[in-house]
Length: 446
Image 1: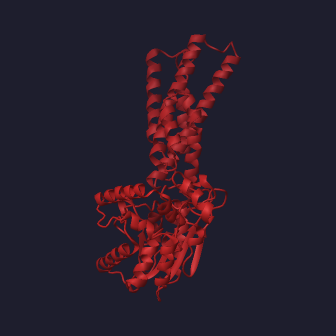
Image 2: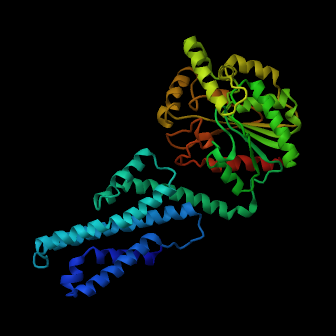
Image 3: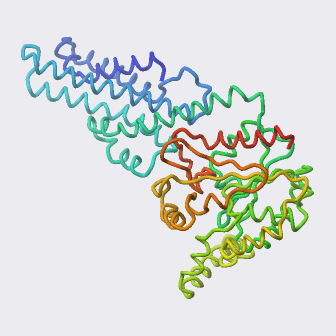
C-alpha cells in the first residue's frame, strides 16, 4: 500500500469515524454533511479495493500479501488513534459531547473498522500459504468484530508478515540471478515422488520446489503415475516411462531426483535393467538404502488378519486411481533391512552415472504433524535420528551425501524434504536447498 493511500485511509477513517464533528462541531447542514460523508465513504472503498503499491509488477500473491499487511497495519493504527481520541475526550468534560452522542460517535468509528479489516483479511486468506487451521478459524470467527477483531488478528498479521518477508526474499533473489539460469542443467530433471501418491504436475507433491527450479532455468519432467508394487515392478515401469520420455522430448539423458523408496526403483532400473545409458545422475532424497525397521516392525507386529485387511483395502483404492499393479504388502516388504541388503548386493553403482544422496532428520516428535510425529518416536527408539520414517543411517548413498540441517530446534521431516506441506522453516529455505543441489549438477556438466 502506497504511503499516500495510507495517509488518505487514515484521514478518511478519522473523518467518517467522527460523525459528531461532521455535523455538530463543524456546524454543517444536513445536505453538506451527507455529501461529505458520501465522498469520504467512496474514498474509503477506493482505498480498500485499490490500495496501490510502489511496485505493481510484483507477482499477484506477493502483491496481495503486501496489500493485506499494509491495510491491517493502517487499520490497527486507526483503531489506536480512535481509542486515544475518545479517551482524551473522556478526560476533558468541557470538550465531550452529550453521553449518548459520544457513545454513538465511538461505536460508529469502531464499526467502520470492519471495512478495512475485511479488505485486509480477504487478501491474507487468499495469498498466505502458511496459515494453519487455527489462524484461518481466527479470521473467520473475528473479522466481523469492529474493534476486538483488529487486535485478535495480531497473530494472523505476524504470521503473514513473516511469510511476506520470506516470499519477498525469494522473489528478489530469483529476479537478480534470473539471467544466470543457474539450474539450466545439460540434461533435464525427472522428479520421482515416493509411493502411494500421484506424481504429475497439476497435483505434484513437490510443493514449491519445481517452480523455484524452473524460475532458475531447470527443465523438469514428472514420474506421472501412482504406483504401489514391488521395487522390481516399479523399476520396469520406470524404464518404460523413461524410454517414452526420451523419444518424445528428444533428451539424450536425464538427471533423476527420487524421493524415498523411489530411489530404490531408480537404482534397480539403472543397475539391473540397463537404464544407465539414459541416466546422467541419480539424486536420492531420504531413501532407505539400508532398509527401514519401521516397515519391518509393521509387518512383524501387526496381526495377520489386520495386515491383510489393510493391504487389501489399500490395493482396491489404488486400483481405482488407475494403478495397474497394486501390491501394498510387496511395497512394504521390499523396505525391510534384509530386502534392502539383498538389493545392495545385486545393484552395484553403474559406471558413468553420478550418484549422490540427501538426508534429513527431525529434531523431536513435534517437528512434524501426525502421523510422522508418532512414527518418529518409534523409529528413534530403535534406529536413532530419523525424518519420521527413515533413519539417517540408512540415507547415505553414492559419491556425495548432504544432510539438510535447519538451524534451531525444528528439524525437517520426510514430507518437508519435498515441501509437501509448503511449510516455511525458520532459517531454512527448502526451495533454495534444491536450487543449490541442481546447480551442483550443472557445475559438474550434467
